[in-house]
Amino acid sequence: MVLSLLNYLVFGFKKLILFDKLVVVTGASSGIGLEITKELAKKGSKVILIARNENKLKEIIENIKIEYGNNQCYYISADLSKEEDLNNCLKEIGKISNDNGQYVEILVNCAGAGNWKFIEETSFKECNDMMSLPYFAAFNMTRLLLEPMLLHGEGTIVNINSPVSVNVWGGCIGYACSRWALKGFTECLRIDLRGTGVNVLEVIPGETKSEYFQHNGIGDDSFPLLSKFVPKVTVDQVAKGTIKAIENRKQKLILPLMLNVAKYFAFFPFSILLKYLLLSEKSRNRLIEIKLKQQQFKLKQQQFHNINNNKQE
Ligand SMILES: NC(=O)c1ccc[n+]([C@@H]2O[C@H](COP(=O)([O-])OP(=O)(O)OC[C@H]3O[C@@H](n4cnc5c(N)ncnc54)[C@H](OP(=O)(O)O)[C@@H]3O)[C@@H](O)[C@H]2O)c1
Image (cartoon, rainbow, N blue to C red):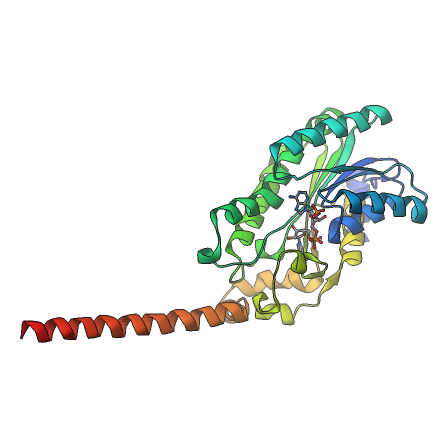
């Protein structure tokens, strides 16, 4: 409240009006992206929904018409890990922009996927796929839609990231690297866009009740122990928080509040406790397995040496 007032007095701060704005949301067919889409549609934005599942997107558009009376939402079915589909998205968005006489003023990069695996379980393809989404998709969508925002001196890029980009936990190396790449992208973009009128907002939701974990085959034993102590958030809370942050031209949103505290635990003596809390049941079991294999290997080596020594004698 006080900060908003100060902002207003010093910078002539004006809330961003979402009504009638042309907005692109990737990953709009489910979870966080879907809920952000609904909130935007409620506010009267013209939303372009992007995801692969065409039937789901059609159904969502129909429901938006019925529930919010918003007839100006569109969908593009695309696999954002494919260059051809990305270029097709640009063409389709260009057509929608021309028809409406508007440019895309807000881009929400929310499409994401990726299993939580150890490096030895990850194939070449899985490693590349995890970089494709969310990182490459966010990079390329921004690259393709930025120019008109720069020309108009007004725009918002929203990147949905994960708490793993703040504190890594065990057993999700490919997933974590892609989110750290997204974090680097977000921070570089913010520096490059300073003073242009285009805002970069990073949203970091904690564990959110969505279908992400079923979609990506992540079991309960993969969650770090710490997750038991941090309250889960709902897609509704993340979406409402994101909309408010866009309207208020914020740069960062971390949910729930307790996750903001986690970074202070990175210092001694809490860092020792934190390292333990960031291990999952799967990580602890893997360490036991590795230790057992090491012991068996040592024993075999010992037996081999004994046999060799006996032969020499
Ligand atoms: N759930 C959480 O606890 C949580 C917490 C923090 C951050 N996040 C991050 O938020 C993002 C969204 O998560 P969510 O919980 O909303 O998951 P979700 O329900 O699985 O939604 C993922 C969305 O991405 C789309 N998508 C996946 N692969 C795609 C591709 N190749 N091309 C285009 N679209 C694709 C999916 O649609 P189609 O399958 O139709 O393509 C879907 O709309 C992820 O990056 C996740 O890491 C999630």
